Image (cartoon, rainbow, N blue to C red; front, side, top):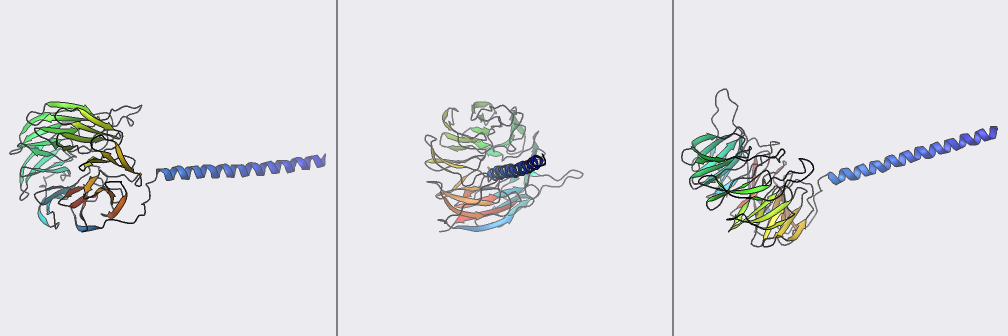
Length: 402
C-alpha cells in the first residue's frame, strides 16, 4: 500500500510538472502571437535601397507654432514666384520661392479680451488676394503684394481648408459642410450652399477647387459636387464612395484631398480607398477603382498617383484607372497625398521623411528628412522646387540635383 501511495505521489508530481510545462508553453505561444500581432500594427521600418536620385535641401524656415494634433493639414501655396504659408499662431508669410527670404509677414491684430486668432484654413491665393481662415470661423483677405489686411468676414464653422478665388469671388468651405461666397473686393456675402454631415467624419476638409465657372467640392459623405460660382446652385453631385458599413466608423468615406481638374476630367479620391475620374461638365463617372485615400491625387501625362490609408502608394493608368504598380514598403507610416517632381512621385510620412519613387514602376529612388515632426499636408511642387510643411510649422524646400 505504501508503495502504491508513493507511485501515486510520483505520478502526481510528474503530471504537475507536465501541466506547469504546458502552461509555460501556452504562455509563450500567446506571447509570441501577441508580439506578432503588435509588430503587424507597427509602422514599417525604412527600406534600405541604393539611391538613384540626389535630393538637395534648398532652404527651410520656421513659420511659427504649427498645428501639432489639430489635424488641419496646413500647407503652402505658390503664385507669381512667391510661397504663401501660415502657421496656427505664426501669422501668414510671403516668401521668395527660390531663396526662402521673407517678403512680408502678417500677424492678425489682437482684439482686447479675446483669444488670439488661430490661422487654420489655407492660405488660398488669387486675383491679388491671399485668403486665410481661422478655427473660430474668421475669413481674412490680404493684399498679395504687401500683406495689408483688406477685409474680414465670418462663417459658422471652423475653416480648415484653403479657400479659392475666382471671377471676383472668394469661396470658403467651413467645417459644418457649408460653402460660402464673398465679394473679393469688400467681403460682402453673396451666397452660401449648406451640406448635411454624416455622424462621423475624418478630421479635415478638401480645399475648394475652382474650375471654368464652377467650384468642385469634396464632401464628407463621400461625394464631390460642382457648384455654380455666381449663385451657388448645385450643377451636379456625384458619389465617389458610398458610406456603407455596419458601424459609423466603417461608413466613413470623406473626400478630403483636393480634387484635380485636367482638361475636362476631374480626378478625386476618397477615404474609403476609392479613386474616380469624372467628366467635369456633367459629373458622369469615367472610371472608378478600389485604390486611394483621403490624401488627394497627383497626375502625369499618363498616370494618376494615390496613397491609401494603409500606407500603400499606387500608380494608376489615367485612361482606365487600371493599377500599373503598387508600393507597400511604407505600410502604416501615415502617408501624405502624393506629388510629382520630375520623374518621381513623392510622399511624406509621420516621421518627417520624404520618399521619392519612380513614376514608371514605384521603386524607391531617394529619401530625405524635412525635420523630426510629422508631415500631414500634401507637398507642393512649383518651378521644380518641392515644398513641404510639417506639423511643427517648419517649411522646407527641396530640389532634385542636376
